[in-house]
Length: 487
Ligand SMILES: Cc1cc2nc3c(=O)[nH]c(=O)nc-3n(C[C@H](O)[C@H](O)[C@H](O)COP(=O)(O)O)c2cc1C
Image (cartoon, rainbow, N blue to C red; front, side):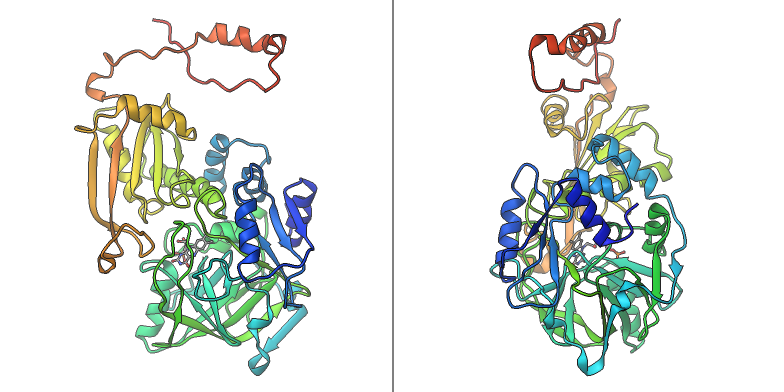
């Protein structure tokens, strides 16, 4: 498997999944505008900006994943051509793998180390993405590393970070996220919270860091489990772990009661999240970077240009499915958090083989409230096992033919949501949300008498498939999974 971001970039270039941009470009809105426009193409490559106006120190990688299932699959060590339908269950199994990361004394991240008054984070090419953004965001596709003061638990999460000045970076964590909980614990004791932030990160660490693992789980162990190994170095200021092959890392403290104005920031919802507000910041004491470092940036936008939507849709679905497995819920055939629904956060579709009365309703409630599914998600749809949850056309068809608005809706109130949901107005009701559970399965009470589907006979399908080219159709044949059942 690729060893670090640089090897990942070379391999992506070989696969035709990455474009190096050497024409000069402005980090103020121009990089993000090009990324947004490329993100709307059918096969949007990752973009490595190598010539950034006004910034000698470093390069920026945008659209690491974007709308490319090939780059996501490759990052997990899967066949890049695997379908999303096959990738979700494979990712579910991969996310169970765990191994202790190794501590080493040296690594490429130690090529340049700067302490104290020599620290100047403004030297690096941080993009300002959207016209109303509050500043330059050095951290988007990043990783924040903290340690729970009550235990040895190390947490890794992905949180946006805005440059304030040479030595300060503001970070925003939604109420209830691990970083928010850990920082509050230090502050309540009147102690500064030690923080490491990684701005040029291994793609898998970014991906794993953005997922909701149960509290107490160390995300580095998942990365090492999937990659086979992952090297860390003990930070010289805080003792927190620093990925040895990262590109750019800072170390410092977030001091009790010390906040700065941060935002607004154009978000994964496709809206600015919240107005400029006070937020904690990291007082930087050390900067570590490789020569000509690569800052990993994520454009937050609606789908498809959003960097997080597809990978998050796949991985979140895999985690929700795992939560259902862990609860012993049988009959689950597929789960998908559709990327078009606010970066994979807004909607979850679960397909199941209904095994008993109330099964669909149980699956709906648990998918809506399990640890991986509870945050934000507003619409949860249950479909039968003959409906492919990864094919939105089939889901819409199931809604139109199996769901009865007067009988099949449940609303959950006062659920875990976020300041970033634009529908929660007036904004002082945030972050409480609500969830719509839609049962688009055949009514179990009338399952046997439900209208029969007009489906192909399997032998006829296979006969036609064998002669496909004979009919002069150039495209590959479509996959059909559901057939007429002989009485
Ligand atoms: C590109 C990207 C940026 C994100 N930015 C934020 C953010 O600024 N604040 C936040 O609360 N969550 C943000 N998230 C979501 C968190 O990373 C996610 O909820 C994660 O589970 C947090 O991990 P933790 O709770 O283990 O710390 C972002 C996710 C992605 C993919």
